Amino acid sequence: MTTFQSVVNLEVKFADDSAAEGTFSGIASAFRTRPDRHGDIIQSGAFKRTLAQHSLENTKPAMLWSHDQSRPVGAWQSFEETKQGLQAYGKLTLDVPEAKTAQALMRDNALGLSIGYRVAPGGAEMRSDGVRILKDIDLFEVSLVAVPSDTEARILSSKGIEFDADNPREFERAARDALGLSAREAKRLMSDGWRGLVREGPADDSEELAAIAAKLQRITQSISR
Image (tube, rainbow, N blue to C red; front, top):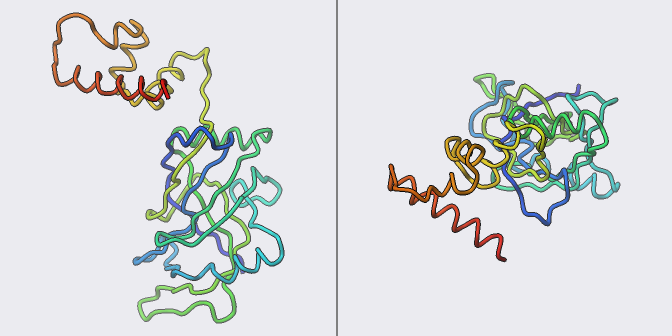
């Protein structure tokens, strides 16, 4: 029987500019000390055999939209076991409508990951409290889903979060993310431009201005590299 295990909400941030458009990475399944919402604990090493098998056969688990085999949204590029869990690196196929939707939802931290797998023979044991310990599983796919369940997993980075330049709200949100501005600072930038953000007049909040100055210095340094 194939099992689906959901993973926690996405936590998106901008990645290195050298990364390709649509790429992202995260923990597909966390190595937990407490059971997930399905009552399972996946142990470290549970993916070792299946990853080796995929490598031997030159295959990779599929990247699907909500476990629907008819709706792939991209391709997983690589996986590795870390202390945190199974780390996945993938790329959305942005010509696919669901992939564009996924990219937009990532921006609002509205997606999670979920693995589709089968427990290998002898790969699980049941504790007396009913918790199932998974030690060896066959990984078939990792999906983008709306309802996560594993609160110990995170998307680590996402490249290519876009915004509609004709939409002021989208631009304001992008400015907040890209420049590290607060909502108040972004609104000031939108209404009064750069001078409004810097505020050349007397300060009404010296701590606030010092914080803004520090941000502007970091921005200037990044631009001049």
